[in-house]
Image 1 (cartoon, rainbow, N blue to C red):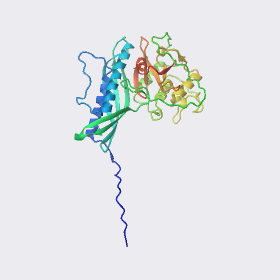
Image 2 (image 1 turned 45 degrees about the horizontal axis):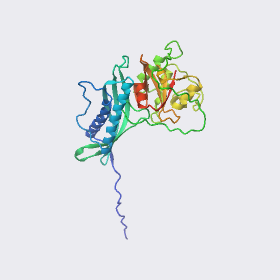
Image 3 (image 1 turned 120 degrees about the vertical axis):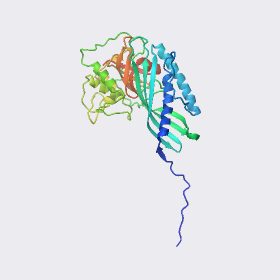
Amino acid sequence: MSYAFLPSSSASEAPQTHTANSANMKAFARIADDVLSQRTEALVEEQPGHRPATSGQKTRMSPQLQKDETEALSSLRTRKTRLKALGEAYSAADTKVSVDKATVTKGKAVVQVTEETTLTYKKVRGDEPTTTGFRTRYELNLVGKPGGAWELTSIASKENGPVAVNEPTLAKTAVVKDDGQTYPDGTPASTKYPAPAKPKAKTGGAYDYAAMATYAEKYWKNYNPAYRQFNGAGGDCTNFISQSLKAGGWKNVSGTTSDYRNWWYDGSLQTDSWAGANEWAWFTNSNNRAPNLAYVYQMDVGDILQMDFNRDGSKDHSMIVTYRSSAGTPYLTYHSTNTYRKSLASLIASYPNAVYFAYRT
């Protein structure tokens, strides 16, 4: 009897991926905190005695990322200058970073982190909100180096909406193929400041605008468990404004889910207009639920702002006004990126070429 011996496989075994140990988790948290805190500090007005946040240990970066971060900090300082020209400044900041997940494969790490930042508004005009804040997610890639050190090679946002105020890169845009149909898209609004007066009756009408703002500011980062989330399906921004409008008295319009003239949500389904930015606009315009304003600076509490980042005719994001200063600046709260009282000035400073649509609810 003869035996045949198979040759050993020359292919290497599949790389083993494992969860990072506690020491590496702490290192990853420090690295992320250092990079993101430096970005935040680039926006804070310099004051006597002010010391930028630092971890006490310099973060090691790849040459390309070091170049990218140097450019990012420069662009953020330019944004600070643009904001100052618009009458906005920050006097203090606090950035905290937590590691959500970290895996290591053959000396390379992929790390998911959440940043939570609060910026204190400087009282330039006097009645700015006390703070603005946001919670956002990033993915970091790192390479292990001799001696146990880690080198950061990339850091990328995992959100779909407008960039966080301390984020230098452009937001992702929804690419929607034109189906050749005509929809009630509405009329873009001018970003001119100051805008002609367009006062809004706060009480005595069909809707409770204070309730809309209260709802949005309650659930801007801790989502209402009574509703499904759409962060993995194009973003949660329009779902969030629909919830806020519902809390303030908007009534359902029954019918099929795909007909944009309908608007409702239940435990298992919702209309496309409830969660889709374009469909919400079509619903609103076709039902005369919320007419377009000619100027974005005319918006008041409970009004809605939508943006087309890349001017391709498709709306990419939806936000609700939850505060308006006496100087006429609306402050917006939204999901994806989860954000509290971000000024309209900050949005325009970040996206001067976007198309804006303002709605009077």
